[in-house]
Image (cartoon, rainbow, N blue to C red):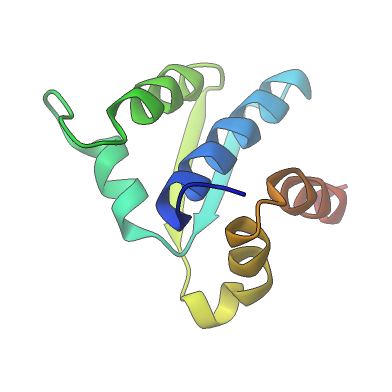
Length: 102
């Protein structure tokens, strides 16, 4: 079980970046229903939130590819992924999404 939904979103984004790098992708789009994740990633300066360590790791992973774009999607359009993330099935969400891309 994950700590909370925001932490799950961040950890999922980290895993997406790892998989993208392993697959040799250069342009990545991360769709999220969390505007907070995007804000934490693009915000300049030192992050002092409880997610600082995770955000720092995510920012490091973003450098693994040429281009990353965070796209906001309404939670209603993202219900399945949201529920799986809440229940801790992060790899299931990523694998499902990656399979759809192939």
